[in-house]
Amino acid sequence: MIIGSHVSFKKDTQLLGSVKEALSYGSTTFMFYTGAPQNTTRQPIDDELTKKGLNLMKENNIDINNVVVHAPYIINMASNNDFAVTFLKEEIKRVEQLGMTKLVLHPGSSVKLSEEEGIKNIIDNLNKVGKSNVTICLETMAGKGTELGKNFEELKKIIDGVDYELGVCLDTCHINDAGYDITNFDEVLKEFDKIIGLKYLKCVHINDSKNIINSHKDRHENIGFGNLGFDNLIKIIYNDKLKDVPKILETPYVTLNNESKERLFPPYKFEIAMILNKKFDPDLINEIRNYYK
Image 1 (spheres, rainbow, N blue to C red):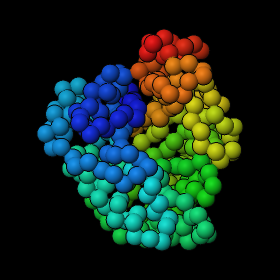
Image 2 (cartoon, rainbow, N blue to C red; image 1 turned 135 degrees about the horizontal axis):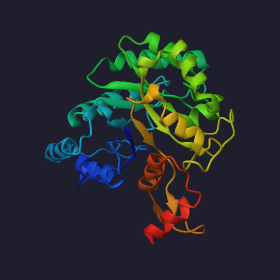
Image 3 (cartoon, rainbow, N blue to C red; image 1 turned 90 degrees about the horizontal axis):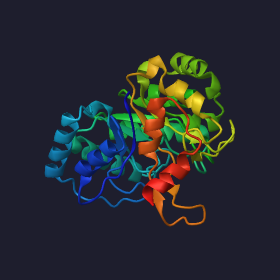
């Protein structure tokens, strides 16, 4: 099972800290941002910490090709300005320096442009970024606001227009919120294969959803506690066609109690164990709170 979660990438520990955190959750892969997702502040990559992190990955049989980096949210490839191109190029250099091969990217939002203009900008900007050793994986989006990439057809247009090969990251919460019925996931995969092609599927974000199908809201929920349900998510995670695809949890952190939002704790150790046991634990949130007390 190639499964893990989002982990931190801290200034003082960088990749080494990310690997240690992933291992503490019982993960066999992980995903991280190389800096805060909502701003441009970036610390230099420490090659010594990278080397130690890569060695620890090797010791624990974590395949570097299964590890995922996520590009910052502030990159809007659908925009007309050059900032997105310049910043994504720099981010790709950082990913290459770390030795990673997959970078998940939100396609962008058209804002005041038409969808057609937004998609054209995404294609043009990605062509300006150019080919590298890193595969850019376009994420399936929920269609919140003016988000693009909310269906397989839009992603296919982008893939066909770019001069080099892209990948796709499928997010279970997002496709539900975009209108795909994941209770019949085999049919969703069949449609994905017909429109885009399964060979392009490089990563899956495993998230439950606070929302009903086709709500276009994008609000993640802990595994089994949302509208997708534990059994449906297990069928996706254990789908034979996805056995070689990294699966990443991005579920919400848990508050220590219902009233306080100040102390938040990661659920991943518990959710991964629940997934590996294939048995839903309705008291999971309380168990997480008790563990971190």
